[in-house]
Amino acid sequence: DADVTQTPRNRITKTGKRIMLECSQTKGHDRMYWYRQDPGLGLRLIYYSFDVKDINKGEISDGYSVSRQAQAKFSLSLESAIPNQTALYFCATSDPDRGSETQYFGPGTRLLVL
Amino acid sequence: GENVEQHPSTLSVQEGDSAVIKCTYSDSASNYFPWYKQELGKGPQLIIDIRSNVGEKKDQRIAVTLNKTAKHFSLHITETQPEDSAVYFCAASKQAAGNKLTFGGGTRVLVKP
Image (tube, rainbow over all chains, first blue to last red; front, side, top):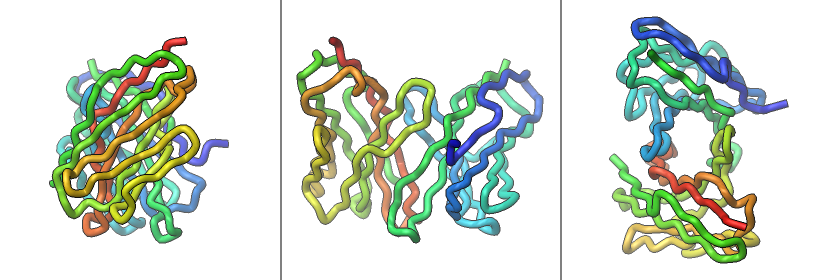
């Protein structure tokens, strides 16, 4: 079973709709992240959470919100989707306190906003 | 904030040849430099990393070099194989920023048999 899972894997929505992308992990890591990937721009950090009570904005948080429902769950919401939010979205986890800064990524959610 | 630039954006090599990807970073306080490999339809996966107190690190056919003075680091893949075909990302982080990663734009590597 995958350690970091994302649902849905693919989503098509219309401009103005609210959508939620979900991420779950079984690694027991405290830190979780949301990135978006666009061609040529690499991965850009949207939001990150160092524990359940700690949520922080990344470099491109406008138009997005998050919820850390539990250590294992971190959701990303687009309150009113717009076409330039069409991208590949990744969730990741890490736990530097265990001696490694490695981030473990989920399989991604491909989002198309029409 | 940190800025990481990666070159080239695409790289085509013949099987058995070497591949080199280069990255530069802007923040001299960055001290951790990982490389991630993304295969088609999957999330990125760490393949090698290096810290600022080390100039070079090797793991079988892959190696990373770091030049702190020039603020650049490179990934070297020797004896390339078809399974090396993927997108590769470099990244940089510093402990003072909570170890958040700033990624380069990615390099699409194609190994031709």
